[in-house]
Image 1 (cartoon, rainbow, N blue to C red):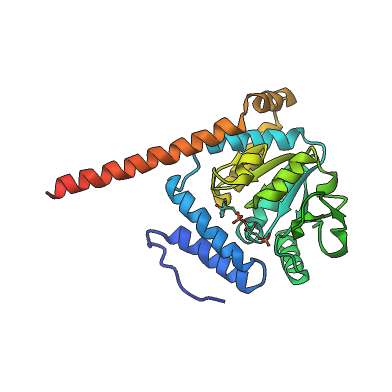
Image 2 (spheres, rainbow, N blue to C red; image 1 turned 90 degrees about the vertical axis):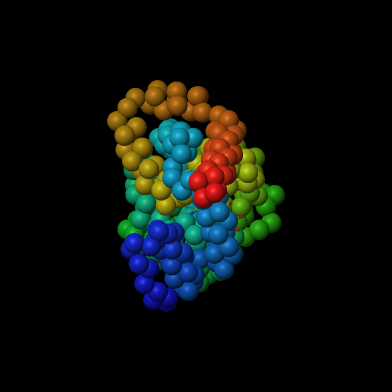
Length: 264
Ligand code: PTJ
């Protein structure tokens, strides 16, 4: 384990702490080596998005909450990065939405499956699907290890949440007639484009927001959820995140020009 002390007053303390969490989870066999690289890509997009939950992300969170609450058989798919960053929130989300939790890995190994299951159980998950022989079904047209799913979980689901995912499986799940909720800081990714709802936000911020939104929406009429879903357009929502990145870049550039002006 790394024992680096991150000073609380470091300007990038939160980001450094998330890195420590991922590195330690990598050393424990939870996160894949590639997961560290994937996190770096996420960080870069987070920077461009202003490192806060944007208005379009909040709209997507609300639509995702509505989708969970109108689902018959929702499943939350968990990979190494998701488990390392938000195991407790995944369990809370499963409890408030009545969802199942399933381990699904690109770099699947028995040791990683078990390490992730253990972490989720420590976070009080009642049942963790998709481990060992239980991942006995296959998603058609998918050749990666992600094709292996649990017949009681993802295979039977009508709604699947796939945080921090690569694109192939999202596409395959949609082809199977399932609704897919993605969480991806990259609004240009294939996952983001193919999903039914994409939350373009850091999972560390959006997972607790999603739990909170489900809890609020749960007390309202189901018609309200249907209305939210009718009004949500994923492509338009992704475009709003792209425009936000462009605006942030323009503002960063304007600030640098202003600084230079003041220095002269
Ligand atoms: O645990 P495994 O074996 O299933 O492997 C998981 C990884 C993450 C290695 C695998 O799914 C992968 O390679 O993913 P990609 O294709 O790199 O996609 C991950 C996406 O998640 C990228 O678009 C990142 O921008 C995004 N991302 C990374 N960290 C976060 C994030 N999105 C939201 N919150 C984050 N913290």
